[in-house]
Structures are given as C-alpha cells and as structure tokens.
Image (cartoon, rainbow, N blue to C red; front, side, top):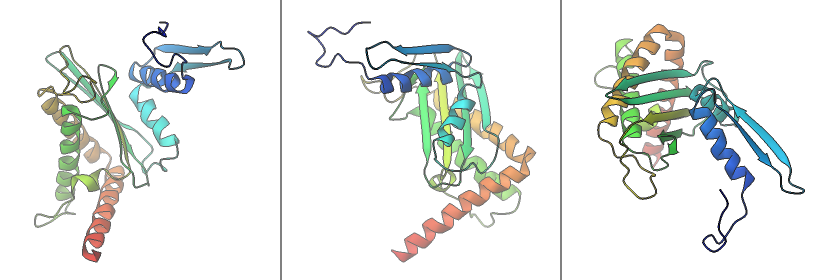
Length: 223
C-alpha cells in the first residue's frame, strides 16, 4: 500500500502506530508471525511479533506495562462457539485500581465496546456475586457492583462472526444482539467453574472487589 499524496494530507508512516496495530494482530491470531521493518534512512529498525499464547499473552503483556502486580499468577481463559460465532476472553486482576478492557470484533478494535463487552461485564459481576453468596461471604442481598468487580481488571475480548454489524461507520461499536448472550454464557459458566476449582484465587478476586466496594461506599458517605 502506498498512500496517494493527492488524497492523504499526511503520507509519512508512524512506526509506533503500525507496531501497536501489528502487535494486536499477532496476539489475536495465535501463532501468526508478523515482521515489521522500517527501511527509511536513519530510522532503520525491525520487530518480529509472534505469540503462541494468543490473547492470554496479550493480557500478560498489558499487565507487564506497569498496570500493577497480578493478584493471581494465571490468566483466566475461556472460549466458546455458537451458530458459527466464536468468542474468546482472557482476564487477570492486578493490585491497581484501573480497569482495562480491550475488545475486538473480527480483529478490529471496538473502542466504543458493544454487545460483546456488555455480555462480558454482566456475566463477570453475576459470577463474582454468586460465588460470594455460595461461600457465605454475601448475606441478606449484599453484593458488589459491576464497577467493583472490574477494579484492577485487565481483560481482552475477541469475537469472530460472519455477519458483523457495527453501530457507526468507524466500526468502533459492535451491534450484533446474538453476541451478548454468547459471551455472557461463556464467561459466567467458565468463571463459575474456575472460581470453584481455584478457591484461593477466587478468594483473592472476591477480596479485591469487596475492598473496592468498601472504598466506594466510604467515598459516598464522605460526600
């Protein structure tokens, strides 16, 4: 591809922007090797991007970017398929306070979210609350909010579908209604299984969310 100066105001390629985009593609397509080379005089450099771990490696990479120290060592991974649509999710909590959720539809970044993110968020909150009730931490209707359940979370959501529908020309928000229950079902079922099979990690995640809840309540009372 060579940009036409009669169409584009700027025809100089931004290496770092391309590197970010190519790295995303290498993470989203596990095993694919992408080599990015800059041959411009005085700017020569090359980067090989190859991640067998796919989006699990993506989450590890994001957490290594000083977002915080992981609360649990393993990245929780889940995948499911229905009617030709595939959804995969990887997540890990850190000891920070920021929420990092990055989502993609057919390898395109959906920076405004959409139905896949909505399904993910509702399932995550429900699974953590239900787990808290099951082990007797939450009683009498107590629980945490969605905001609490996502504090310190780093998650990558990737869906692939044949008829992707976007809510704008920029394709920044996914609109397919059938994707929400697909992602919701996968995340709730797999996370519920994971928390039961890994009670030590489950307790750490629950404690993290409860600490966020207490801080939010204290701030509300102070206001």
